[in-house]
Amino acid sequence: MAGAVVSDRIWTVPNLLSMLRLLGVPLFLWLVLGPEEDWWALLVLAFAGLSDWLDGKIARAWNQASRLGQILDPAADRLYIFAALLGLVVRGIVPWWLMAILVLRDVLILGALPLLRYFGYGPLPVNFAGKAATLCLLYSFPLLFVAEYASIVADVARIIGWAFALWGTALYWWAGSLYAVQGLRLIDQTRRAERADSAGADTGARDSDDGRGPFAGRHDPTTTASVDGKPGAAPRGSDRPGHEKQGDTGS
Image 1 (cartoon, rainbow, N blue to C red):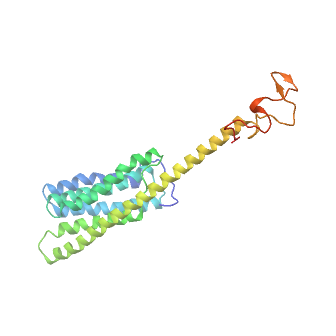
Image 2 (image 1 turned 90 degrees about the horizontal axis):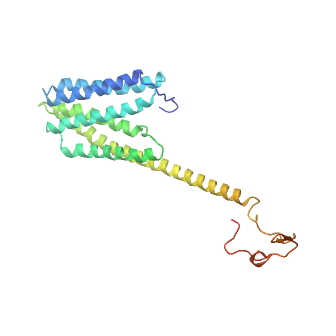
């Protein structure tokens, strides 16, 4: 959504679609784990995928991009992925390690948020790889549910579903690595800016203390010196011209 103005509005059409998508998560889980009404569950998943596409389109077309939407949209996607994986694992359709790999990636991303906030950044915007990974995974789950029914269609659905699942998992981690690189760059930029500001403040403070520059406060050998308030007296000790105080470099 490059170039779009991001507002603080809450009640927008894209946000309402995201909220409806979030409300569908517990309904989907109940349909899968309770009565095992897979076809109704697939309809809920289809609505989630359609609304995910629509809210982005509407936000761009109607200039309704919002900060709340930037949080709700990826949150709904992750919850549907988690809910679908949980249902598939509990039903014994997919192995637990697939869910562990995907959940681990999200745990690492969430664990990095406090570090980003410490340096003044919020959650990173969703990148193209992340969107592609989400779509692949959301395509794979309905196919894997269909694969449980004995038929030729089920056999085809199993092959295509696993292809989407594995490709989506790879993209999911690739997107996570892109988030990590982007976050590290932002943190590095902030540290550089802080060091530059600190160096500038130190230089300004030294210049202010020196007053007339690096040799301010030293006796000018071409002028008459004053010692103990007596004009014309020669400077004594370490204040003689040509004899600098130890450690005084003027910097």
